[in-house]
Image (cartoon, rainbow, N blue to C red; front, top):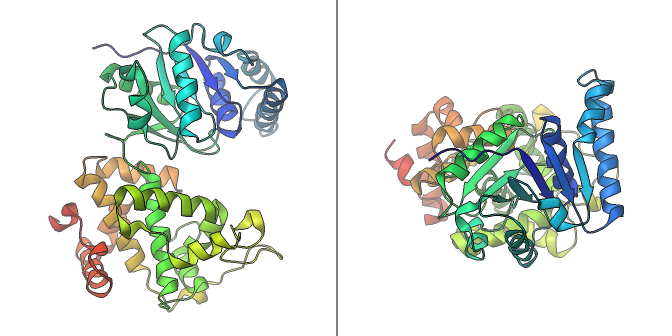
Length: 378
C-alpha cells in the first residue's frame, strides 16, 4: 500500500498548539489553512507567528525573505469549509473536550473527500474513542505535538485500530518533513508514552514526600544534580501545573488502576487552589521567585527508587506492545527533556539494581510496585 502524500495542510484551532503547528508546516514549505472561530483569535495567532519568525531572523536563523514567504503560505480563515477544501491532511488542535473534537471532526468528514487524513493533536483523550465516532476511522490518526511545537522535536504518532498503514506511514513522513522526530505509539493507551512514564514518576516523588522519606529540596536536588535531570519532580510539577498532573492521574486511576491515584499532597494542593507557578504557590512558594537548590541539599537522598519506578512504568509499555525500548527512550529525551531514556538509565545504573529497588518498594508498599514482565525477563 502506498504512503499517503500530504501537500496541503489545514489546522483547526489557532491557539498555542494550532498556530505553532501552522508555523512549522509553513516553514517546511507547505501551504496551510489555519482556522478558528473569530478574526480576533486569528489575528493574534498570526501576530504570534510573525513574532516567532522575527526572533529567528534576529538570531540569524532565517532571512527576511524566508519569513515573508512563510507568512504568505498561511491563510487564516473562520470558514471551516474554506479551511479544509483541498487539504490532504486536517490537523485538529482545538481544546481538550471530547464532544468538541468529535463535532468538529464529523463536520470535517462531511466537507472532505474520503482520501483526506484526519488527525487529532490530543494529549489526553483516547484516539480510539475519537475514531469510533467517525465514519472514516481508517483515515484517522493521533499526532501529539509537544508545546511549543516550534521548538519541541517530538511528535507521538498514534494510529487508531482501523487506521490504514498508508495513513500512519504518511503521518510519520510528514513529521520528518517538517523537522520533527516521530515516535510510533503502536496502539492507543492513556498518556501515550511521555505522560504515561513521566507523570507516575512525579506521583511517586510526591508519595515519597508524603511518607516522610525525604524533603522536597532533597529529592529535587538529588534528581537535578545526581540524575542530571533538568529539574526535580516538585519544581516540574509546579511548572506543569498541579491541576494538570492531578487530572492526568485521575484518568490513569480510572483506566489503569488504583495504584495511579494521585498522592495526598497533590490532591491537597489541588483542592487548595495552589496549582504551581501560575498561582504563585504549589509545592514551593514563588512569591520571591523559584527556589534556589544547592547540590549539597540532595546528598542524603538516593534517587534510585524514583528512577526504578520510571523504568518499570516504561517497561509496562513494552509489556503491552504500546512502544519499544528505543522509541520510549527517544520520546522521553525529546518530550521530557531527559538526558537519558528509561532503558538507558537502566543500563547505566544496572538492571539488577533497578529490579532490586522495585522489589524493595514492593515489599514495603504493596503490589503496585510489582515488576513488569519486561523487567522480570531481564
